Structures are given as C-alpha cells and as structure tokens.
Length: 250
Image (cartoon, rainbow, N blue to C red; front, top):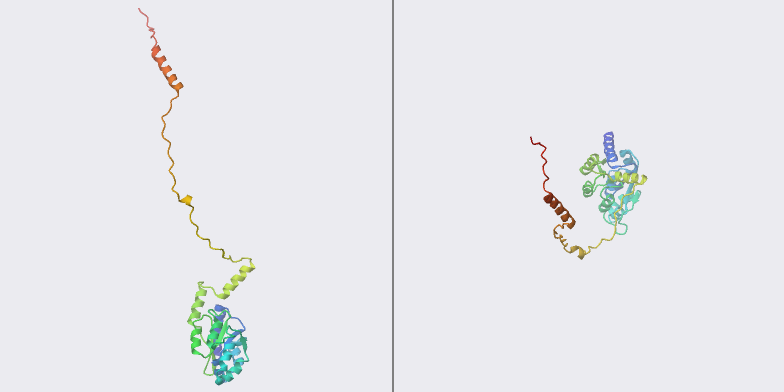
C-alpha cells in the first residue's frame, strides 16, 4: 500500500509541476490542526513528508498560526512542533488574524509562490479547493495523504493546455523575454484631460450663397458688322456676270 500511495502522490505532483510550475524544494504551509493530528498518530513530519513526496521540502508556517495556538492550551505540543519550522512573513504582523484567514491571504488568487497546504480544517480545505493550483495534505488513518487536484485546478490546467489562458509563470517568462530583446511595453499617456471648448462663432455662421453673374448679351464688334455688310453689298451690286454664249450662229 505504501508503494501505491507514493506512485499516486508522484502523479499528482507531476500534474502540479507541468500545469502550474511547481519546483523543488516544495514549500508546505502547516497549521496547528495538522501538527496536532501528527502528534496523536505519532507521525514525524520532518521524516515522513520528504519520503512520501519524494523530494526536498521547506516546512513553514506564519506568525498568525503561532499566536492562535497561544490562546489554546490543548495545542501546546503542536506549537512546539511549529516553532521548529520556518516562519513566512504575512501582512498581519501588527494585527494578527485567524490561522485560516492568514493562510488564505498567503495563497492569494493564484498561489503564485507555489505553496502546498497541510491542514485538518474542513472549512479551510473547502475554500482552498476554489483556488486553482493549491495541493492539499491531510492525515487519515495514521497516514499522510496528498489530495487529488480539485475541479478548479483541473479546469484551469485544461484551459491553459488549450491556449485559452496564460499562467502567471508564462506571463513572467514572456516579460523576461521581452526585456532581453529590448521590447518595452507601451505606457499609457497620462496627460491632463482637455476641456471641451465652445465652438468658434465664425464657424457657426451660415455660408453666404455666391451671387451668380447676370448673363450679358454678346457684344458684336463693329468692325465685324461692317465687314459682313460690305461683303453683302458687293454680292448684290455686281450680280451674276453675263453668260458668254459659246455657241456660234449659223
């Protein structure tokens, strides 16, 4: 059964590697509920988790998780275990919040830091399944189990494979390639908005219709008139010349 669980975990990890860009060492966010379950079931987290996931790990938690355990005396042993892990800085240093709220804020909308989450909190797991690309770890029957990818993660991976979406890692690689080739993104001009001015009053005037020139009678040159009359007189005065009869009288 142990070998079978490791093979299944390897398939799930390979899915997150190729679909969401997970790389070793894997970062695992752990809360108090997971540590408490490990104590009850006598599970050594530092030894068993690397063997189960077959890779290098970084076990970490947040200040909000530790401060929440301060208020619960029953979880004092879980707090001692969590203190051995790395502490990731969250945005609630001055005003600590609940552990579940803090872990969700670390994941954000797309889990760009590639965290795995180890928890026994049911409400936290249901909300995490709505975030794509977040592997879940929990303890069942004295064993650590890596949950199957959620429907949200599978849908996102299929959309990326079909070219309908771009992952954050792909966006970073595209921007880095553009910087190497010297292509800079076009910045939007942030100039002052021009106020709408009133129209020019001269342009609003009606166009005047141009008066068409009146048709003037054609003037006849006096010289041409005289010339034509002179020709007519010559024709009338001379008349037809005498016809010469070429025929001889007998």
